[in-house]
Length: 439
Ligand code: GLY
Ligand code: MN
Ligand code: MN
Image 1 (cartoon, rainbow, N blue to C red):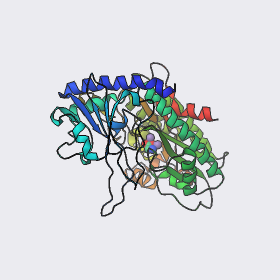
Image 2: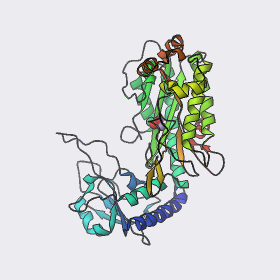
Image 3: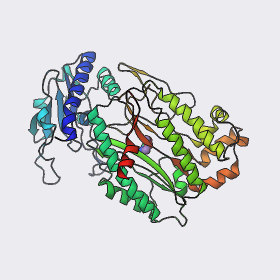
Image 4: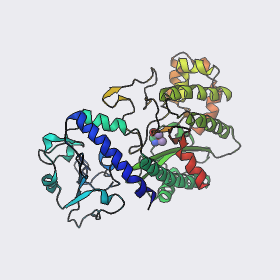
């Protein structure tokens, strides 16, 4: 039996347990989840890449079956209403198969509207989905009590989910290694992107987010998704933030390379890498994720000080916002079915919000870590004109050695990102494990 087949029944039992609680909270008898529908471009008959409803793919590894529905009723076998249209224009989803099939009652329908005759009464159902999934009066109601409960608990991954994320990591690591080779061989950003997709066996329809493939100063654009077709004349650096999917689960991996292994930039990459591993070790039960973020500012400012980029103490850099000019994003986020997993700020499974620390608007996770959570740890240092101008405007120009900034600008920036699982004991770094296994 495969690993997935062995682990899946426990995953399903856990989802059923959570669902029974969630329905009780909201006063419903059934959970109903449409897989979602295709979306069309304005004034055009072309559809966007289909993105399955995450509440649907939480239950089973079907990511390309629009128009299908799940019905979960506590105490009963889950039901899958599976749309398999008669259609010679498109590939029709093949008949369900795999380790999960025996756990469902499956009804095949040929037209989307046929689902209606198999769905429970809408008044007693929590229907979780997007508005476009409505069939006549049968429309998603997304009751907050049910959504909040399920999304909060989705933060705790089952062993099955960790196994899926390990596989998503294995695929991503393989593609990262191919991309690094392409960079060293002088490929363009577009060329490296194609090499990555080829090695992963995935493209925009599958990848959990758009690849960030940045050469030289493009590394300073946090979400750089342009891809130059021509390589730069002089290669300095390569920042790649790219993941992969497996059965609906994501990996999210960033690496930064200097073209010249003996350069000062490579030394700075190594320093960020060492600091990042210390941060990953903080992914432990009862640690407040906000604290990891604030500690990261001090560690990164310490690196800037060591390399002569700033002239003030790390504490002063944090207090004055100077560290934020070089590290302007959060230390990471939860990850799982979605690359930026839901409920990052959830105070409890009944709702409520845990605020971000003042002055840190881009942090995406403020919860206290507990076993089962999987988070990214992605410190970065960048040389971004717009933010450095703010430092000057705010009166802190003397905190920075601008000649050192100019020396590093052609390299763009550094980010190192791993996906790390919190356990009862030491953290499991899925990404480092993946690179070690591929070495
Ligand atoms: N790839 C987007 C992120 O790292 O959050
Ligand atoms: Mn990330
Ligand atoms: Mn990333």
